[in-house]
Length: 169
Picture 1: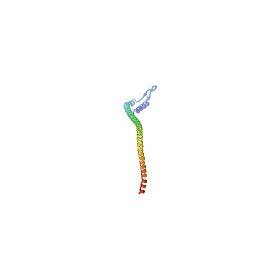
Picture 2 (picture 1 turned 135 degrees about the vertical axis):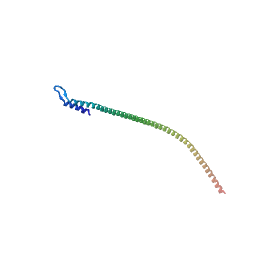
Picture 3 (picture 1 turned 30 degrees about the vertical axis):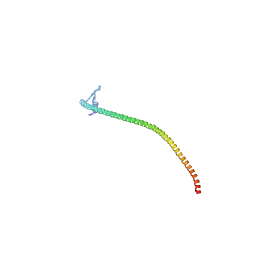
Picture 4 (picture 1 turned 90 degrees about the horizontal axis):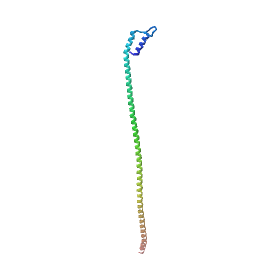
């Protein structure tokens, strides 16, 4: 039986009792009072047990909530740590990429400068070779023209003599 109900019955019994004159005393039905008290002795341990069960359940729920909160916090820490690691990896990769790109630019500039030097050297040598070849070609042409003119003059000098020899015959 509910302890509050028993307390209400005990209170009602006291209210029904007869008041003694000039005192605060009350005459109540003794048997009914002892019955209510006995029922209270039985009900109180049950109420205490219920209260203990409720407290234990509350403690279990609180402990479970603490465990869950701790697990969530640990997961959040791990995730934050993972994100930080990923961020640091990304930042490191970006830095390395920038270093590689800068090195590649420097290497490209060196290679371009070397290529420009090589091309300048080869073109300079080619210019010298072409100038020599052009000089040989011009000298050859000049010699051929001089020989041709000399032959033409010789041929022209011989022809009138042949023509006059042909006329005299």
